[in-house]
Image (cartoon, rainbow, N blue to C red; front, side, top):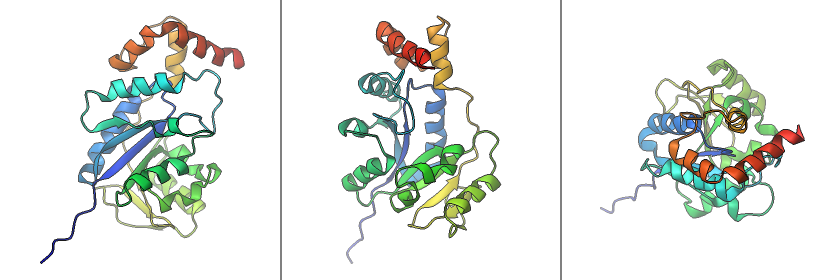
Length: 237
């Protein structure tokens, strides 16, 4: 009897500007990886080259941000940085990124991690309502959002969405048009923001334990360029 080859393990994807990467990003990657368990072989942090919904003012170079993410990932075997968005021109659309993943590993299941406010706004993203054709969602609550809020947001975006049992224990789950599933991962979200880190840095205050040491060393080694870019953000406000 010929054995059927198992599909390759899935991959979780955590995108962001990472300007800079901070402990909230790393903790979210850990929580998601542990929750997904054997469904994935690890988590990719994907630095955004040209954020479609954010101003470029105050944004560190893609190279510097990617280097910081890579430095954070060095000590975690299942975590890696994917520079795919730095290889394209124009806005860094999630649709294009997931298409690149699909082309590289057609059989792999993709789990896209995002916060509940972003999930509710997917209709404003480029081809956002088509993303379930390419991936599953792992939605993490923010701002007090509940599983009920998550399910309401899913049915508002996709009226045909239906509640289903989740592969993740204790998680609410919605089956979405296009084939993807949305899982509500009810884990604490650390109240750390990159904007707060930037404010502290520019004020000359201590950001230890907010930014991983490996990334913090890169910030210090590039302090002049970092201050120049982050100061531009304040002058644009």
